[in-house]
Amino acid sequence: MNIHVIGIGLIGGSMVLDIKEIYPDATIYGIDNNEAHLEEAIALGVVDKASTFDDLVTADFVIVSVPVDVALTVLPKVLDVIGESTIVFEVGSTKKPICEAVANHPRRRNFIATHPIAGTEFSGPSAAIKGLFKGKTNIICEVEKTTFKLQEKALQLFTAIGMRIRYMDPISHDKHIAYVSHLSHISSFMLGKTVINKEKDEQDIFDMAGSGFESTVRLAKSSPAMWTPIFKQNKKQVIETLEEYISNLTQFKDLLVADDYNAIYEEMESVNKIKEILNGITIKK
Amino acid sequence: MNIHVIGIGLIGGSMVLDIKEIYPDATIYGIDNNEAHLEEAIALGVVDKASTFDDLVTADFVIVSVPVDVALTVLPKVLDVIGESTIVFEVGSTKKPICEAVANHPRRRNFIATHPIAGTEFSGPSAAIKGLFKGKTNIICEVEKTTFKLQEKALQLFTAIGMRIRYMDPISHDKHIAYVSHLSHISSFMLGKTVINKEKDEQDIFDMAGSGFESTVRLAKSSPAMWTPIFKQNKKQVIETLEEYISNLTQFKDLLVADDYNAIYEEMESVNKIKEILNGITIKK
Image 1 (cartoon, rainbow over the protein chains, first blue to last red):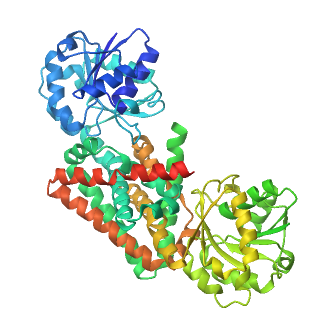
Image 2 (image 1 turned 90 degrees about the horizontal axis):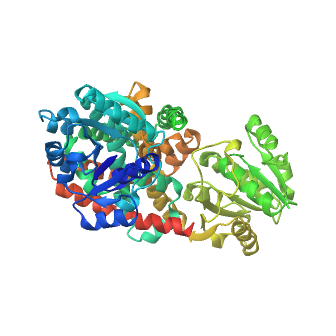
Image 3 (image 1 turned 60 degrees about the horizontal axis):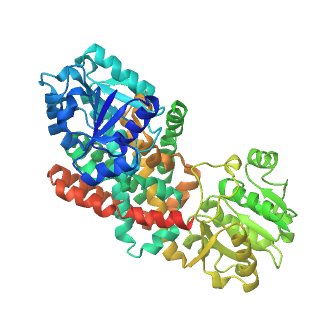
């Protein structure tokens, strides 16, 4: 089995680590614009050897795991050169623009649009870890546009690395993911900014920040190169979530200004049900 | 050694678990308004037996770990009845109102104002865990107002359970903690609210929420009974942090509206330094 991964970072790298474990005979080829990343990935054993677009004609799978703006131009080029029975999938956090970019490509049926909901705040080949996808959800969009036989092969691979599959149209995907992922990243980045700006003497943050702050601000370590194009592509939805978030924060502030502590108590109590929702997530893991 | 803990939840309960481990001969007495909590704490072995305010005259240590509004009335009553060499300390997340409440008490010198920066999102006696304070910071306010000998005994106890000590005046404490703790809680509660309100079908949250959302929203599981009086007592500072947070979020949204992705990239990149700050926290742990 020939697997090519284009963009060897957290997601692509972790995916091929799992694939190699399950299919030890597979050869993992890597393509990366960043020469240093490619060398690092080979040195770390994340990929076996470097390849080029010319080699994709014999690929069984091509995993495109690049920032979503790069995906828009890379994906059509990949589809141009693959073989008849190559399956191409892409793993970014937006789905509508990606699906549109290949909608009319003659090889559209060799492509399957996915979003594996997994990750950490780290990036680059050294961020690749085994088992990242175990028990996680893989959202597949427009599955009907992929050849049945290739759908089946891709699903087999996703199931083998431990993922649960869920089907969704690209517009719904982008709308929901803005709430449960994109907004979390912005809330975390801006929390980090607010605290850093205030506490010029970083020692004060060191000493007073507990695990609560650490957890809430964790996503502010994420890669700007990955996240800027996500916010750009999902601009409309992200702005909507931000407006609602800002409005909820402002309302909370107004309750505080008005000394309405009963309402503040009730606000928090009603959000407490997130416990059960999160338990649901954990149980499914 | 006689230790009395008033309010047997996450903080008080965890503290006496550690104390019992270090001083196996200590007897741990519990006082709690909530009869069920008291029984649960005894059943769990968190405290040895129930006590009353009349027993405090023979106490070595009295730990007051109740919501901060309750502390304002309980603390003076405790000081009224303790013995000459009893040390009383309180562990809440605001320090100025607490210090003011006992400022003129004839037994002020038996009191030491502390804020152990440790916790989880859980509450009640079953939330008590061993080792919660290991490597964490304990902020002590107005240390000079405590009898030297009792300071020494208290510090010995805090050091024995693994805490680093830092001294701060109550006003600075309340100002800094608003940024690194109180704001994180509100940002998390309002993130939870925004997502719950939008995603009426909770199954969608289950399936699409990853570890990023889980981490960012974790604090929204916290107890409203504990947090409402904290926000009330630190109202002015909390409103200030909220205004700055809302302003940063609005500015980010405006950059998105204006399609200024270079500025968005730079915003995130400059907040990325939170990595080193958080590494500092982790290393110190």
